[in-house]
Image (cartoon, rainbow, N blue to C red; front, side):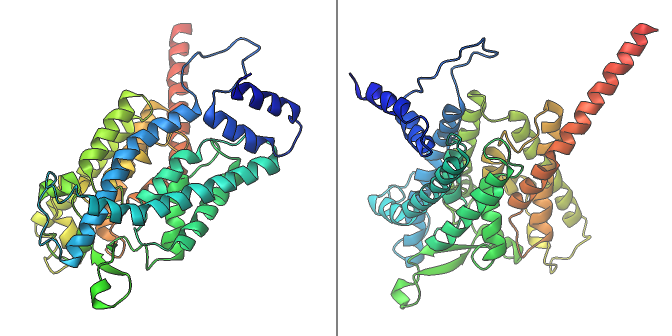
Length: 401
């Protein structure tokens, strides 16, 4: 008798125990569930929620690994060990030393994110008596990629507990939440600890060690520089490849683009939301470029730096591309209708650039834009459906006449 059968027999003997949901979660993580349907099935498909979540995680892993190398690279740049960024294919970038520094700082974030988040999921599953849901598998990976690299682990712990409990469990769990859990966690950090999440700074590990000051130095991101009307000083290709300061997983537009293609190919991510969000960002960027070039705003204005930035470069800096691909497309909190997805995505891109330009104190607007549209997604779908109903009723009346 194999281990799987022994575990299944153990589960059957203890099927009335309150702690069984926790055991089932571990069992189905290692093995396929033994349950089969007893009635006719409506849809036959090879995927399930866990496989869908794993597909998104696979799309995120390249961003995570690259972010580790980049964290180490920015560390050595800040220390002066490297005089300047030398490009994506530079062996210095892919050195073992960079990966070690990245692992040392990023891996604890991943462990805390998954450990605390899944512990909360297990507790709620046991209390409520339902199976542990797989929705946090993606959230647990997203969170370390969108927070500052030197954020205190206790602060991340508090935020994860808040995000899982308030952002998801109080609504009924996975599939019932109205806000993206990962962005709920980041929003909590932003409002509770604003000095750590200002949006215009990054914390480069070890940058001030040689000066005998605290463990990290606060350095400007490209958005922070532009918000202060200072030139970014980075090559466009470096911005595209991701060899720039920033949150762990948000810097490489190239890898985010490849992840988007993978999600579209596997039909996990909505291409309508992605395309419309990009269009919305480009339209808003073009409007601001027109305002700046028309001379309606002076170069001394605090808005000029970001307003005059080439409209397409907004997609290469900050977390806009990452948010569009991995968080705006969340199937639970996004619009469900095809027309609604176009409206939903367009407004996310449009509002993101608006917040980025008009709020220099927080030049990264994609988080607030997505959360805002999460709230309005059901309303968008409601009006789309009502519009369809009205059109069908008109056709029925015409045929009846």
